[in-house]
Image (cartoon, rainbow, N blue to C red):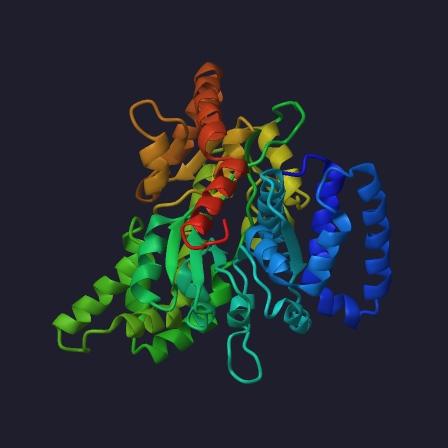
Length: 467
């Protein structure tokens, strides 16, 4: 075992030269890089004559012989994809946290930014081996070559798409997946959905996102915050009309079912609609593939319902006389003009949102219809000692509910009770602090990115021979 950090770093650099030999030559950088490493290797040979010859190791890497092959199999990197800063950079912050923690665990990590119009840059990874390739809700895994093959089928090693929305939203990407694609998701219902409706996926793991700590003490200056956006339900009305026509009225029935039974998943509500129509002889039973196509078709219903329920929750809070601090220009919408209790602030980055939680006594989370999940927003609130106010999910009720709950969990079918529940914690500081401290201690054990990255590594070990 090489004990000296200089030698370890040299071996890694020599390995990377051999691994990316083709790219170095194509870029005209091979000769200068090789010369630089030879000179470093000669110095290290003189400094550490008792260790394995650095120059000999470099020659093995440059020739890509059986010694290189063995080293590559044992030390090949984990590739992580980043993308456009959608969702205000939240998904890229996940990639950064995973990369940071993998690096701390001793794994070689490479990060590649996948940008529209520059997908050809991924060709540099063809014919290479990776311990794993990780994407955060990425479309990259569905990219095809000119001959019809999936690009990622030319790369050795398992692929993991971390999906934090309903999997059917990514239907087109999942049904065009590479042969060894795995899905990591934050909701147990989504695990079941992928296993039933996407046989193209090789395996599925439940691993929610983690939380991070804002590193400085700050004053609790906000009584109640919501770090989320506003979306007008009317934005999807035109798409809904088209979906309703294409589905022969199923979309309208689905809309009423989902609005009425707010604890059901999307698929459960749609299944009830379909079952009723089958029973009436109005349609035939659907295969799993046909059902996923139908759910994808009527997805405007989902966006309309989510936005309407979010509106109703916020209206209940503001209508009771409570103040709510929100962030970003989406809240300047005409709908909120008459609510003096809505306090607007500039948009915040994922890092800045941690400070907001640290400054908040209570903060609101509204699940995007995730009925059995944990989200990064909830984890961040807990770790930054902010009382979580969230609609119920199976995961949260199971771990943080009970007779002495660690957060304020409310029923979507009883949102009129929410303002009184919020007032209780605002008026009882000791109770709030006790609740927050219990949640904080649990989150440090179970909801950090360090913990989640360890779970990702375990998932990779269960599906990869390189770890």
